[in-house]
Structure formats: structure tokens, C-alpha cells
Length: 184
Length: 184
DNA sequence: ATTATCTATAGATCTATAGATAATGC
DNA sequence: ATTATCTATAGATCTATAGATAATGC
Figure 1: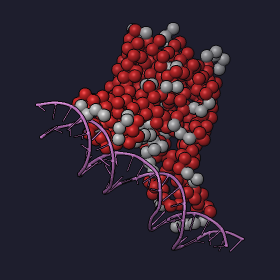
Figure 2 (figure 1 turned 90 degrees about the vertical axis):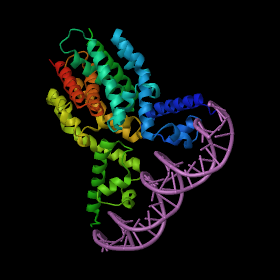
Figure 3 (figure 1 turned 180 degrees about the vertical axis):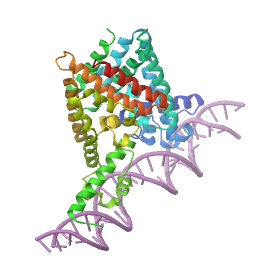
Figure 4 (figure 1 turned 135 degrees about the vertical axis):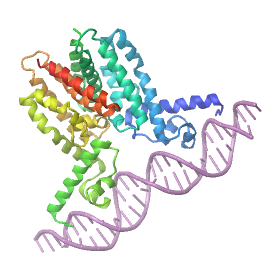
């Protein structure tokens, strides 16, 4: 086992990657520091040389998880309908561990430490701005942006929560169809 | 302290009421059985004479919490725009403990025991049906229903999670304005 | 000499159970 | 006699820390 500074950096990032996936899948309270370390191939004792506290990992993991929507966010600038179609999709619903942390953890965010909520707020604001720009010269562009963003987050979160897979698919397909109609 | 059967029923309901509020505020993992019992004026030892397990309380509390949106759900039948305006409101956002358990716990639901998810799914299906009926004789009524329901749940969940109160209000006001425009 | 990780553990939880206490209800 | 609630606790967590071990890096 390596102990160099370069190894430490790689170790640190491996811990955060495991956490970013598991927090989305099980919620912020759904996995322990010990289990995260074990899954990263480490033992619990080393954790606090990497993070001041569990909350510090929560914040780092959330920020890392946000990278998983950067592609979609970039696509919003040039092809908003395609970006939204990628977001409101069955494959996104079925891949919570690598999907958007906003739809996966919006309830957890409301109860999270301030530092995490601030990173969350900044990203939400940015996405809403991009969505509003996708309706250029329309008076109610910002209202539409608020509705579409709420639909994206809400439909994926709901589609994951309902037990009936048919209804789950209907939520995704219906919500997407209605949103795309707003671009006609 | 009373020990009659009538008292036991009242005690049982008091426990469920406390849980229904606290689960919405702090998440399903956010409060312990002991703290729930304490808040109901009891001690932890009596809990398992009322519930087979913690999960059983989760299911009962979620079903009780759903009663807090029955008024809104009834209003959907006769005055859908008013019902939606009540749901997508700052007062609903600021009262998570007595608000809709769907927007408060949609992420928790995705990770909840099957019995809870089934009660959840049934209610979601009913609300979507009512929303679809609010666009009579429109071909894409069900698509609109999926989008509007996702917007309602998503906007309230997002408005609670963002830290900036101005953005929080904008999400609510913008999403509501855009939804109401669909009824014009 | 410093430090990245490990083993071990303290101290604080949390769920669930056992057995005592004190009331109800036949 | 039954039972609703209480006190007490077992056993399994979980976060965080202390001190040992073994590698890096001056």
C-alpha cells in the first residue's frame, strides 16, 4: 500500500467518489463513514486525516456529484431540448448513483449543513438562468424556466419513488412530452 | 397516567402524529424512536406494544401525513387552479411539518420499505388522475397532469432546499405563474 | 523526521427486548 | 388476570480519537 502524497490525493478522491455515489443512492444518512472507507479499500481510522468531519465529506461529495450534470448543463446552452430529454429519461431515473444529485437529494439538501446548501443554491441559480435563456425575448421566460426545472427534478424524483414501473415510465414520458411542447 | 384501552388508542395516534411531523421536517432517518416517544410524553419501552418495528411506524406516519393534503386533493376536483395555488405557495413551503409528505419526503420514499412505497404510489396515481381530469377533452391532458404534478412537488422541494430566500420565492412564484398559464 | 494508513477503542447513539409497576376490566 | 406503560439494558451501530506501523522524503 502506498503512502506518498500523490497516493493520498488519489485516496481522498476515491473516498469522495464512493460517498458521492452512495449518498445519492441511500441518502446522506444512509451510509456510515466506516462503510464508505471500506468501499474505498481503506479502514475507518484514516478518515479524519482527510476530512475535518463527516459534514465536510458531505459537502465535498455533493460538489463532486454536481459534476455528473455538467455535460447536461453545457448542452442547455446550445440544445436545451436535447439536454432536457437526457435529464427526463428512464436511463437517468434508473441510474441514481451517477445521476443528478439535485433530484436524488433535494430533500436531504433542505436539511443539510449551510456549506452544502450554498453550493446547491449556486448551481440551481445557474441552471435556472440557462433555462430562461432558452426562451429568448419571451416575457415569461423566467417563469417557464422555474416550471421546467421543477418538472425535471420533480419527475425524476417521483419516478424513482413510485413502486409501479408503468406509472414511473408514464411520469417520465408525460412530463417530457409536456415540457417539449413548450418549445414549439 | 391512564392505562385504559381508549387511552392506548389515543396514545398510539399521538405517537403517529409526532412521527408524521418530524419525519417530514428531518427525514425518516432524522429522528429516533426514543425521541418520538419522548415528544409524545412517553418512554421508549412502550413503543413495541404499539408497533411491530420502526418501519411499521414509518408506514403509518406516512399514511397519516397524506391526510394533510386531502383538502387540496378534494379541491382539485372543483377548483384545480385554486388547489394548485394553495400547494405552490410560500406558506406551504414554510410549513414542512404539516405540509404535503410527497414534496417533503419524495427522496426518502424512493428508499422506503415496500409497504410505504405502495401507499405512496396509490396516492400519486390518484392525484395525477384528478389533474388529468382538470383538462377535459384535451388530448394531452395526461401529459399536462404529469408535468403539473412534477412541478408542484419539485418547486416546493427546491424552494425548501435553496438557501437564498429570494430565489426560493422566485421558484414558487415563477412555477405557479407558468402552471396557471396552462389553464388559460 | 514526517506522515499516510492501520488497529483498537471511547463514548454516544439507536433499535429492540426483559421484567417490574400500576392501572383496567372481567 | 390482563395489559399499558415504565425502568433498565443488551447488542449493534456510529462518529471521532489515540497510538502503532510502515512508508515517504528531506
